[in-house]
Amino acid sequence: MPKSTFYKIPIAKQTKIIKSGQELFSQHFYENVDVKMIVELAEIPRGSFYAYFLNIEDFYLTTIKTLQERRLAKIVELSNEPDNNFFNLLLSIYDNDISESLFSDQKLLIQHHFRYILTQSLGFRYKGNQKFQRPIFDVFKQYQPDFYLDNQNWHDFLEFCMNTLLSTYMTCIQEKLSKEQSIILFKNRIDIIRRGVTKRWLH
Image 1 (cartoon, helix red, strand yellow):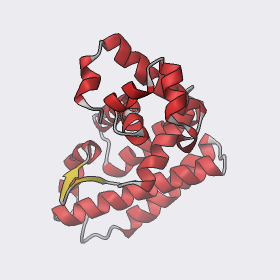
Image 2: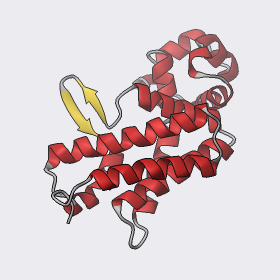
Image 3: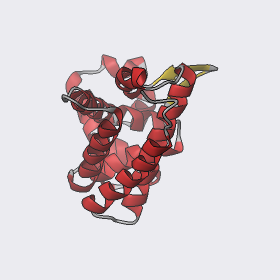
């Protein structure tokens, strides 16, 4: 996240800097964005960039924060739908994710985000030797009573499911599958997981 100095500049300037990141990462792959491109588009001195951010990754994470918050809000909304269960929620999340990635004007930025998640931590983030649960895992917590799993096994199960979602997502993007093909592929994979959860674990 940005340095404290970033929050001391006017909100309008903060917004302009973030929007420059959204524009750049919506047009270029993460690896192709450099500080020169950022400062030119944001119209700030190079020294100011390093006064606000540690590096490109720090700037990127700041840029996608609103994207993460929007996705989490959507997941919470989907989890509140009546008669939803864990596996139906996974399908709904995937449907939303793949739709955003195929049809949004920020689709490349969204695809960057999922690539980043897949190559970094999947279900958890770390600070030193401590492990913190991601907000999305908190949403899934309501479904734990449906499974005969203790906390550690539940977290491992969630991580496996999210890994499946992310890897399926990347396969569909790389192979340029249609939305319908993408959802069918994910549904087939989730059905395998569903069948693999034995009666010993499910009510």
